[in-house]
Image: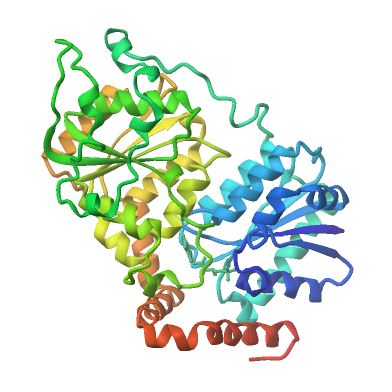
Amino acid sequence: MNVLVINGSPKGRDSVTYQTIRFLQKKFPKDAFEVIHAGEDIEVLEQDMSGVCEAVERADMLLFAYPVYTFMAPAGLHRFISALKAQDIDMKGKYATQITASSHFYDVTAQRYIEDNCRDMGLKALGGFYEETKDLLDKVGRLQIITYWNYIKHIIDKETLTCREIRPEAADQYTDNYNDNDEGDDKLSYDKLSDDKLNNDKLSDDKLNNDKLSDDKLNNDKLSNDKKGGVRRNKNSKYSVVIVTDCSRDNIRLRRMIIDFRRLLPYESHVINLQNYDLGEGCANCHACMPDAYEEDADDFEAFIYRKLERADSIVYAFTIKDHSMGVPFKSFDERRFCDRYIDALSGKPTAYIVDGELSREENLKFILEARSQIGKSFTAGVATNEGVGADTMEGCADKLAYALEHRIRFNENFYGAGAKALLRSSDTVIMMKLFNRLMRQPFVSEKVEYKITDAINELYEKVIDGKSL
Ligand SMILES: Cc1cc2nc3c(=O)[nH]c(=O)nc-3n(C[C@H](O)[C@H](O)[C@H](O)COP(=O)(O)O)c2cc1C
């Protein structure tokens, strides 16, 4: 069988997940494994996908191997999926499977994301393997990996496919049925608010240091009129809401939704447009951000975004659904803020979502939105979409968020939060990572050990792959 491995880890050959692929190569020499280091080489691949297209043509099966990053596949793999879909290759009849390495924290949503995208591309999505990061170092874990691979081969041999139906339509053909409120239509219209006004969130340092985030530049609410009287209404500054979006210049639907939401919200709001910031290529799991976060040369996230979020009373997320996810900028954003320090500082702030797209058809994404809130101990006050059914209206969403702020709503965690917390508390890997991160925050440690640790980990896996016991 010709297997095309899509290695989604930004660590490339140093990835723990990739060691499982090497193990399979050793154990199943009759299968031909070809590897694309999609996570590590994404910048290059995006420029030229011809090699990828040829490799896909040759393959009987695509095997996605990647670590779980913040409920999902890493940002680089999101980009790769998007680039692959754009190639319009005929993949019908080919199979797809996946291996994730993680602490099992929301590995299900990550795999469902890949599965949904495989189906969009016409691939027959088989079940995946949920590996614990250190499974390969353990005899039972290794046996399970071998069993999984034999099972996948059996399904293919016998054509005993039980995969769900392929979706008939592409994921991004969303309806354009968002209705502006007639009464305020001329005041809400896209034309009246230029790009600059929506995207004016890139503040200089001195402006950020100003405690009052209600800087004239940001506070473009003054531009919108009150629905009834048509007079300028100053927003109440008792609470400050930050709307994080990745709204591009030509995304008129989302832009209008944000403008509408801001008009309806009684409290002042500010927009952070991720399009204006450099969040890098997502997390490379290099731990460099840990000590750097305290240095003067902090990156865009630390210097601009985090400081605004920290001061906000509520954070709202506005996005267009892309390939069954919040899209690449949000993926990089989530990866960047996925450490205790940020999660703790931003926790407890009520949140809401403004979603352009058919969220009612995206069970997995709905799951992820709720998980994001639960992990951040935030109450999801509302989710407004432009579908017209099954979600909050923009007015309802703004009203519910205002109520949540005024009443300081912070309910108990549900299963998404409590379950995940229990898992994290009991996971050796996570405890080790926390300890490691704390150590790495000490500059004298990080300078000395950064590369040695990767080498030491690689050495462990090398022994296993070579058949030597630990
Ligand atoms: C930014 C970031 C986000 C992560 N998010 C998750 C997560 O949501 N769930 C989980 O179980 N592990 C998470 N992890 C841990 C990785 O899945 C784990 O380190 C993985 O084994 C690394 O694999 P690799 O060496 O193949 O890149 C995260 C790690 C990083 C750096």
